[in-house]
Length: 239
Image 1 (tube, rainbow, N blue to C red):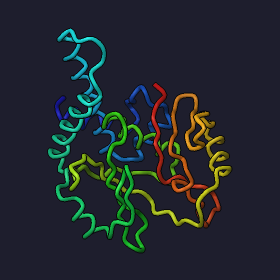
Image 2 (cartoon, rainbow, N blue to C red):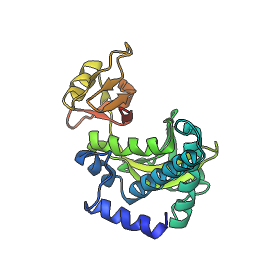
Image 3 (cartoon, rainbow, N blue to C red):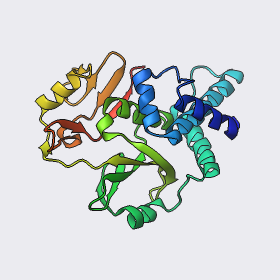
Image 4 (cartoon, helix red, strand yellow):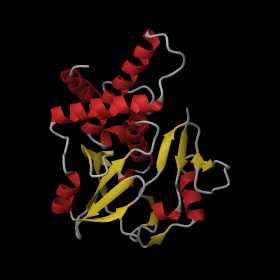
């Protein structure tokens, strides 16, 4: 797909004259709140997946292509597009430390940077999903569910551990304390979720979404409102 055509699609989606069929209206708002780079990245990854699937069908292969093949193609195509757009950031960890402060946290999915007094943190977020495209979807779904901690995509990189990472910003949330299981259950019930019954107590389902890793360390009680605020989670479509 030509990059100028991707730009056209980005503008149409951002302006509300085109949609991505698998996202509902609220989820489209989540895509747009993350900014044009997320929209473009989803388009690039969707096109990469479609190209791999078309090639497999043309060769007579049985079944869908392996996720690792899709992921590899999506990472390659997205890096090429990001470089062309000037949003591929080499040596990102050094740049983030210099510009946005020290690394204050690191988990399986993200490295978090913060400078005292700033209103936002910066995250290097890798994919713990089946493909890069699914990781991009998760940002849009998070924003739709938890608009108080909107993630905005600002670039892409491959950091020192050689993992493809999405660079994003997110509001800094003061933590009065960690939310209780009961508070998390109540918050999610109001959004249409219930415990998925796997016995872990941190994973939920709605009519079309899986929501996982909702343990108290990912849900803060914000001191001004006393309300639970989700800062991180795993969210994906029920397929």
